[in-house]
Image (cartoon, rainbow, N blue to C red; front, side, top):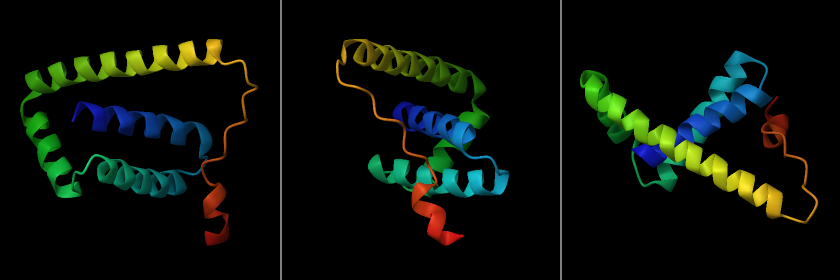
Length: 104
């Protein structure tokens, strides 16, 4: 659950940064969340059931989010270390909606 929620929060942040319209952001987020769950081998129902469990057990939710924050901090530190040691020029980020242009 820690890795899944860390991935979900990173996706949310990326979407909030790149997608201007709330309805489009929600559509992109739902697709990304499905991909994250698939990568972790978790069904949407299992994820929702587990999340509801934590919502009903807030002390455990607090502990879970302490671990998630640590996980995100470690990921950030690794990215920063990679960025400073990487001698190759950085490529500009690919816009998140690039593959969706034809849908509109």
